[in-house]
Image 1 (cartoon, one colour):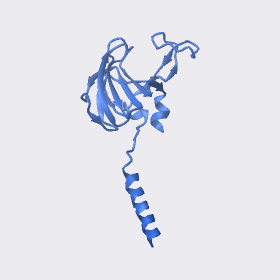
Image 2: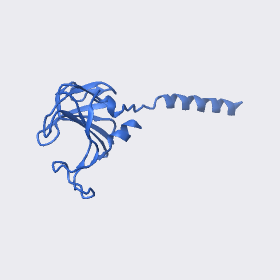
Image 3: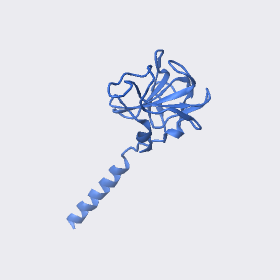
Image 4: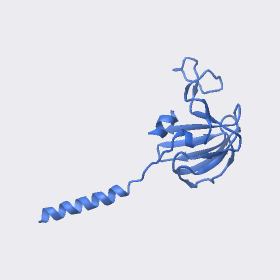
Length: 161
């Protein structure tokens, strides 16, 4: 009888604990800017303005995915997390970095305007900014980049997983 009570208690504790684990909902790339066209994928690039990478044949790598649409189109967060705002005149322009956890950051660059404030909690699908061409941009688009422990990874498989 005592063993049955201990087992029942263990199952109850496990069920309560399991329901407290946060879910990391990830929306696919296509939901970040609805109707956008991918104009440059993640990976090796022939563009000299991209960061140097000795492993690429042309020695440059595009560290994210470029999603082109009309300037002012809403940009949605693919994940939940805490928003950090910034500006980089030599590259990203206006950007929002969503800290998913201590290891993962999702960056949305070249924004025309912000729709969140510094330190705000965001949810998947929430509008965080408007698409633009700030910083070093060849036209209106959002550069979507996922960093894991500070290193860029391909956003498509990460978000689609």
